[in-house]
Length: 388
Ligand code: GDP
Ligand code: MG
Image (cartoon, rainbow, N blue to C red):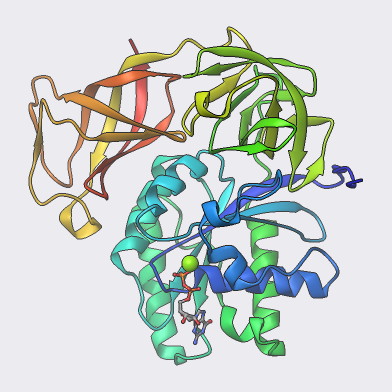
């Protein structure tokens, strides 16, 4: 029998973000190693974090990009995104739940396009607190690190993060992973900065339950399981829920977090829900599981959107009314028609208002963040302002 999950410390969701190869996965592995040595969690090696979710989906614990650990004061779920192609998509969908982020910047390379893109997206989806890991500090020199630190602080300030006060910790994920005491201490210092700088967010426990499906799988003999982060409310075994997108109403017959059964899941938890009598192929990533009748999906909304510049990885040319990109909303990926009204044209670097008509109904509400993607790159980041 599995040990039940016992909620002893406040739970927070954080994640590593930053340019490819700056050391996000190495640092994630190093954090679990440093804490495991303190007896506060299990070491998760690099290969187990970096492999594709499909390959690793086994048992009821599915969010493979998630690792779990505890500091003295908190329990964390930490998400490390796999390849760059899926990065922004996962960040946007996961970031709706991120209470804080560790921005990994290589002290050798400084700010790169994806560094800026991730900071922008974090701001857009409401990640209010960032701690910087100036990584690979083992391989650089002080002066270069000073320069990069300055540059990162400026970038954060430019995006409204108060770059002067953001903790910037010089670390070496690689050396900490190798057990070097100096760099193990640097990872401890980083965790202390996260513990103290990222505040406990407000959880909407009294709101009706809502979870956006990240992954679906079948447990032989038990049924269909969906995984994701609880966006708001609480859910217990035996509760009735509705699956929006699949148009089914069912009952939750099992609940787990990180492989441990739990009585009640609440906003902020990463969970697996076992659903009674739901066929595997009726539920998909992007569907929403919610308290019955609590949300009315819609397809038309108004939004404020920032169109990324070419330098930020966006388009080189303007977008116009009639443009039909993909919208990443929570975990859903839906095509949408944009209408720019009288403005008619939005150039890279512009912030504009637009109305959007999606290809299908999804749960929408003012304040919800989303990304606009085209041909594998992010071209815009926006926030829903009103729903028609
Ligand atoms: P990611 O793409 O951001 O997840 O980066 P990885 O964790 O896969 O690391 C990319 C490369 O940088 C690998 O070859 C790592 O061994 C190397 N690396 C990561 N962290 C450090 C570090 O702290 N110091 C040094 N010297 N190399 C590192
Ligand atoms: Mg990686």
